[in-house]
Image (cartoon, rainbow, N blue to C red; front, side):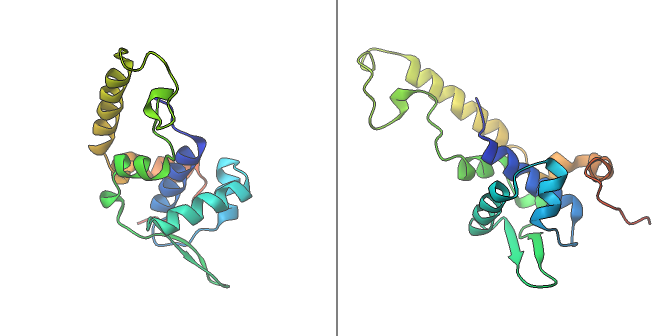
Length: 148
C-alpha cells in the first residue's frame, strides 16, 4: 500500500491542528513546520475544509481549526476520502486493458489486502495518533504549550 503525499500531508495538517487545539493556525505556520509547499498545502486545506475536517476562518483573526473532535475522525474514513484512486493495479480500473484479467487471481487477492489495510485504519482515529504523545508532538512541531 502506498498513500499519496496529498493524504500524508492531510494527516499531518490534522495532527497539527489537533495538537494546537482551540488556537487558530495558519497555512504558513503549517507549511513551515513540515517544510511543505504553501501552494500545495492550500489545496489540501481547501479539500479538508470541503470535506468538513477543517474550518477555515478568513480575516485578520482568521485561521484554521479542526471542525470535529479528533476522536470522531476515523483514519480509514480520512484515507478513503483523500485518496483519489485506491486502485492498486490496472485491473481495478474501468478501462482495464489487461488480457489476463478473466483468469488472473491477482485482483481479488489485492482487493482483500486493500480491505484488510482499510479495516485496520478503521480501528483508529486522529485521537489515537496523538495518544499520550501530544506534548512531545507539540515540542517537535514547535507549538507552545500552556503549563498547568
